[in-house]
Image (tube, rainbow over all chains, first blue to last red; front, top):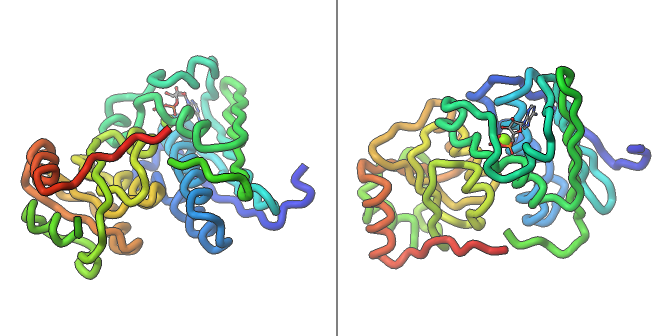
Amino acid sequence: MDRDSLYRESFPIKGDDFERGGEVATRVKGLLQQLGLPRDVIRRLSIANFEAEMNVVMYAREATLEVLVFPDLIRVQVVDRGPGIADIDWAMQEGHSTATEAMRARGFGAGLGLPNIQRNTDEFEVKSDVGVGTTLRYAVHTTSRPKEG
Amino acid sequence: MQLRHVVSVLTCEILSGDDLLDLDIACCFAADLMSDVLASAPNGALLVTGLASSQMVHTAEVADLAAIVLVAGKRPEVEALAFARQRKLPLLLTGLSMFEVCSLLSQHGLRGAVRKE
Ligand SMILES: Nc1ncnc2c1ncn2[C@@H]1O[C@H](COP(=O)(O)OP(=O)(O)O)[C@@H](O)[C@H]1O
Ligand SMILES: [Mg+2]
């Protein structure tokens, strides 16, 4: 599947670790900058990574965010162990959220995360097993016309 | 509008980025909800927020925002400040309220962010 990725790197994310929530997205941004990718590609991926990371912090126990670099796209998969999402269609709607007041006090939990990830990526897929975990896969083409954002 | 102008208009304390005051600010986006910022703020915008947690700095970093103004006399969390300094992101504090900040910036010619589709 990942037969011809030029490079791949994995980053662990811990659930409930609000102090550090965002560090992985920022480290990955540094990696993408080293790869010399267009600014807009880096920005879209970084926004998606940050929302995905915060979802792990808020809802899951732990996860691995993996970045796979291909000649014409960057693929990211976020595999978590946690409660899973029972109704993905529901969760994908803007404004739909099970976040607590404490999560909203940190600026997240308005039900915009998953839609934000989808809007910023060219390929997007969520799979979930209730009681086991959630897997998010998304990709941004590095050669396409930039989506302004 | 230059960042040093923002500092003087809002009488800001500069916690990070005192060597970056020549920076040109294109427009302004005010919110406490970081998902809103990530969804709608264009790059290069000035973030005006009441959120003091490290997530406001990470938001500015991933969305390529120019600088942050933390309003209403709030102090950033320790990690937030350390991170802002490390990433060379200007972080300014003001005792003024969100409303006063937006009103003053607007009077001095700074525009709101235009939502792009
Ligand atoms: N990794 C995850 N594990 C379990 N549930 C999740 C996960 N990601 C999202 N969810 C569920 O989907 C809902 C919507 O997610 P999202 O669009 O990111 O909005 P928000 O995080 O603001 O609630 C969440 O409130 C939560 O119930
Ligand atoms: Mg979310």
